[in-house]
Image 1 (cartoon, helix red, strand yellow):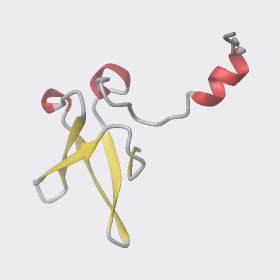
Image 2 (cartoon, rainbow, N blue to C red):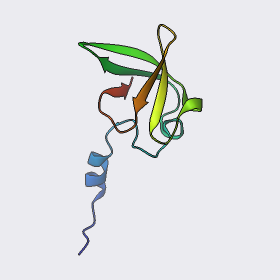
Image 3 (cartoon, rainbow, N blue to C red):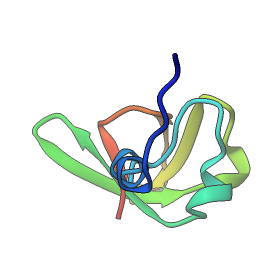
Image 4 (tube, rainbow, N blue to C red):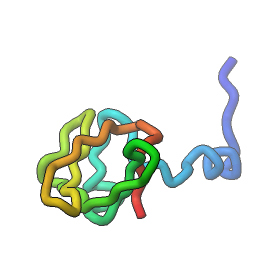
Length: 79
């Protein structure tokens, strides 16, 4: 038997997690600033939605490098 969820339960499940594997970040949150854990600190950069794939997002770091961010992972978030 399948149970149905109320709107309150669904709202609780839809936390501001960036994306899941297979979804496009650009379609949901657009481009913008992201941060990720790097060692003991936090780094930041700008999303590059034009390079996004089904499983990866990419961000341009403050130094100009490209950082690959796995979709559905908890080590990065949108600012």
